[in-house]
Image 1 (tube, rainbow, N blue to C red):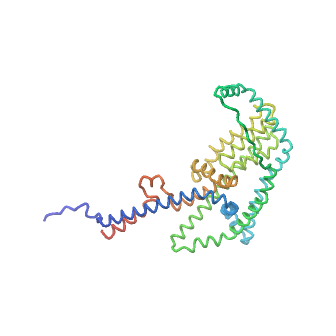
Image 2: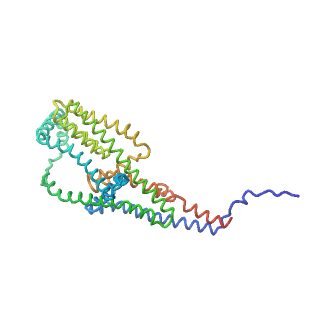
Image 3: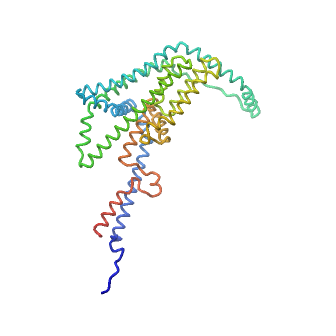
Length: 394
């Protein structure tokens, strides 16, 4: 008997030319749709700032209310577990948040009002300090002036436009700010109160069990990640405020509690907040100390503290779960600050964290790979198509 040698390729499914053409056509079709989706996404990214800026009266309270709902829903759930009705639990969580915010503002505003009378003297002394520095570098101004005369540059004429005073700007903006705050609080209360119905709608109104499970995971991940991040960062910033207050008291700086509260609040804004805090401390120190060197001691101590906090303490506490690309943080900060100003700067990191949690479950677009011919959202569709085509052939 002659033994036949088995063909190693016999078990592999054969792909016919017709199926290969269908797969190639499907791949081209999906790539075309992906390109259209990418172009629409870029257009929305560029057009969204103008829409959100024009409709800030509507969109800013809505986005703030959504983030506050994500933050306060766990607290409302705990209050509901101890027997409180849903309405009282929702109202209690919102009142607890307002109490914390009002306490932080009181710690900053009350000493600031007490120091308001000394502001002209501080401003005058800061101007005198800078005048001394300018006199020491007068030779640079002389060189600049002589270079201008040699180059034949003519003198420029300055045009000063009349602008509203600070009190006039505050008087004009106060009613709209109060209305937006009231709308935000009302929307937050109703969203927290409707959280149970929203969860049931997301979980049980899906077409399949897999969709319900995915919706539950997305909802839990977004809520846990955003709430944990805000609470953890809030605790870190509160500790920074306590250390700054104790350091200001030890260095003899006026109103140490105000500086501690201001450091805690500004630390919520990445990069820009600590820079503003250092500038304020430097200006106040120069304006109140006897010498420039003594005036720079508080700001130097704060810079050292912030360096340790930002590079050692915060990364070790937050861990890899909340690690985000600094470029993305700066992009989100500039993007939402451009749209909504200071509120946008405060909301930028929570919004970025929410979008990151959503994309982790939905799928992140492969932008760089798409340029070089790879699929925009992975190759699951093509793998599934290959299996379906190879199955009948096998």
